[in-house]
Image 1 (cartoon, one colour):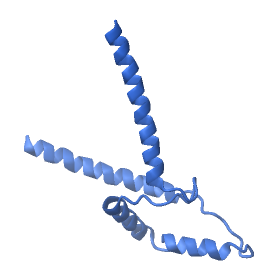
Image 2 (image 1 turned 180 degrees about the horizontal axis):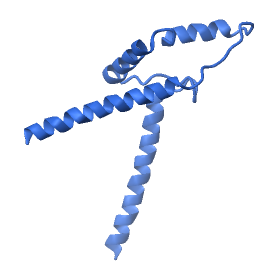
Image 3 (image 1 turned 90 degrees about the vertical axis):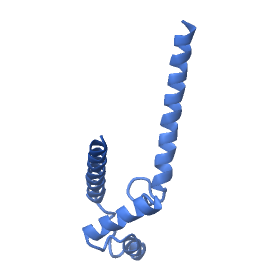
Image 4 (image 1 turned 45 degrees about the vertical axis):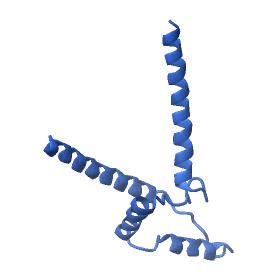
Length: 116
């Protein structure tokens, strides 16, 4: 029994690593913000890219991403879709909304069944 539990936990960790890697690669495939050299904000964009570590190799970026996600629960700041918003807060808000909807649905269903 213990061998089975250990095997399942190891498979779960491998799956988590693969899914995390796929998400990281898909996010990095989004096109970057293009800025012309004449644009007055070009220097700011380059400083932001350097601060986020986009100038480092992809494997180093992935290692930094894994470290920040699993040790500090820092999912970063959205710079592609919702610029400037904290990703963890967006996830928490959506999950809490979904769980509230699930709670209301199950409450209504249980009350309907009890009323029968």
